[in-house]
Image (cartoon, rainbow, N blue to C red; front, side):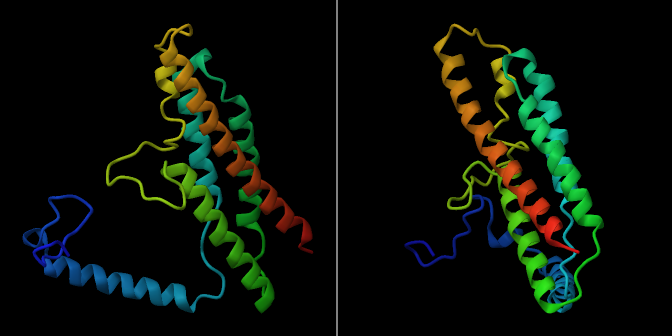
Length: 190
């Protein structure tokens, strides 16, 4: 609420009650309740990791093509490919039948989807909120495209390259840890 006691929506200043469609909200709520019921009664969550890994691969290939020789993403693409392979094996693996096995796979898939989607779609990470604005996929690396048009001798190139190296380190760490977690899980299964 603001100082006048009005309800304030922080998504955008344009989010006001006159934009609210109660019929659409009611229908959306009915769909969401049905989806939540399905999720709440499933033993094994239906999450798939390979589509997320594939999104990394596609985004990185696009960024590498745009950056050209100005920024090397080959090690990042290699890690994305390794994650994609591990995620495909995970998605195709037989799901556990025991309560302990189900809890383990559910915890893993929830953790990995949070971590992978965070790096894929946010700049702020887990402990802050991104602005309510459209962001590119892999926003921590999106500006590698700008490096190709800058002079390597200029300060702007140096500062941006440093930011992109930090972004690449962040993304590579996320990819490496996710692939290790999946491979570790699959190695312990019979």
